[in-house]
Length: 254
Ligand code: NAD
Ligand code: 0WE
Image (cartoon, rainbow, N blue to C red):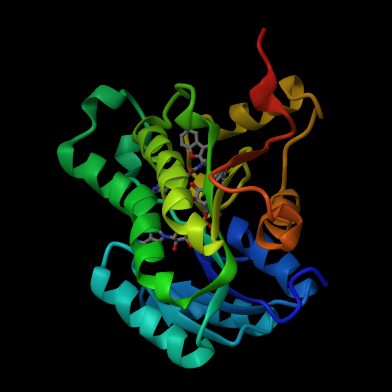
């Protein structure tokens, strides 16, 4: 029970395939109390039964592009829990059109949206929840290898993930003096809602099976177990880090 009596806020469950669902599931099994965010009424209907299944304390609306909604969420969490021990940011969005073709064609608006939702939101959420973080709190976010290397079609999301990973380092510096750690998990590709309809996703999955040292793809449980490490005292000396959970794919050269 690595997370006994810990309060873990989970941003980014859309359904039971979400990476955040895998994380929440293992957190629960390790004794954590959970609360989940959703974006708008349609997703509330999806998140409500998941919260019930995983014994969540409450759910709350939080579109991370809205400072107002983030602030209302922080007030609600303060009144319900008083403090937060673990914050999981598992949120990303770009226009579908910007995840195919040439990066050079990305519009100013598309770039801004992708970076707002997928990168700036981590800083915005940390800012709003800073007063609620307990001593030794752990913050984590989800990133992808497309931040480091140009991956066909990932395009503006690769730029957003590079900004997200740099944000992790600067946030780790800001929050470190209070004992709060900030890390990222760089997950290998997983078939979730955010991966559905992505051109060439099957090819990406089979490339990993063929090339990664472990000769398989990761799943939500692999990521959940790494998240449990980052959430718990087992990772007390680790902050500002990007932890690869990708069956070793990123270490390969030719
Ligand atoms: P998912 O679709 O299940 O989760 C994405 C979540 O982002 C959804 O819950 C959605 O509601 C939320 N979201 C989108 N816009 C939002 C907004 N404005 N405000 C608040 N929430 C918003 O997909 P997933 O694959 O579980 O993605 C979770 C994270 O993992 C993302 O950051 C993604 O980039 C990252 N990731 C995914 C993979 C993969 O292959 N699936 C690999 C590495 C990293
Ligand atoms: O980060 C992601 C997915 C991010 C994502 C996905 C979508 C699809 C639906 C962000 N925004 C949207 N917007 C939509 O309308 N991944 C790491 C999964 C992923 O996405 C890719 C990948 C991989 C891997 C896109 C192109 C190429 C590879």
